[in-house]
Amino acid sequence: MAIKKGGLGKGLGGLFNANNVTEEALEHTKSVTKKATDSESVVLLELSDIEANPFQPRHHFDDEKLQELSRSIKENGVLTPIIVRHYNNKYQIIAGERRVRASKLANLSKISTIIRDVDDDTMAAVALVENLQRDDLDAIEEAKAYDGLMKQLQLTQTQVAEKVGKDRTTVANALRLLKLPQTIQILVEVGDLSMGHARALLGLKAKTQIEKVAQTIVAQGLNVRQVEALVRNMNAGTTDKSVKVTSPYAMALATQLEEKFGTKVKVNAGNKGNGKIEINYVSNDDLSRILNLLDIEVD
Image (cartoon, rainbow, N blue to C red; front, side):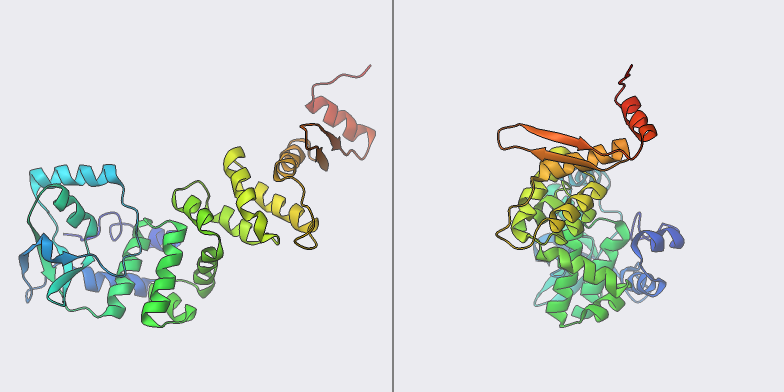
């Protein structure tokens, strides 16, 4: 009986491609979260004696899915025991936090467990790798997990990368997201901004403009390519913090028009809602092409 539904059950190739998780990291996780061996037994523990994994990188649990799991547990019980370790007269979860939360919602007092001897180092790695295998972490949660491993276990970026089976550049790029303002991190966590959006924002020279540009991204539904173009344009027009930058709306609009017309477009937006749009063309044929896109016929 597999412990990780949707994780270990995937083909190895698909899993590695999706998460850049190495075979060594996968085997490491399987060895720690495997079902009980002949020398181990499944025991019932009081839910009140069980604490969350202190290294748990996932902070958001889908309420609707927890309720569904809770209803299933009420009817069928916990089919797969959770894995815990004994710690300070309590038990800490190695794998199975959703089952614990759902069991509490189902008003159960006890849960089936396997008790395993695991140190902090292994505990932290398993918590992260398990969630990475399930694609459950958003970009900020993943970044905070790497940061937590570095601080709690005094690891370097390279050591963290080796521990979870990822490239060092992947870890480094994730950690850069924590340099963003808290408001932007929240937008990533709730899904209003993607990791691509966030990384593009990190390239903005005028850091005071990050939140304003983020608002523009959300309001206009800009894609990552548009944001990257917007940031390039803003950086090109920014020499220092005192220089007034062009409206993010005007730059985003120019980018969208350039994609539509296949040529350079400049949007000058006034403060009172007025302005002008300049569309470049390089030949009479190019002008005819643009006019056709505008559905304009000239006699």
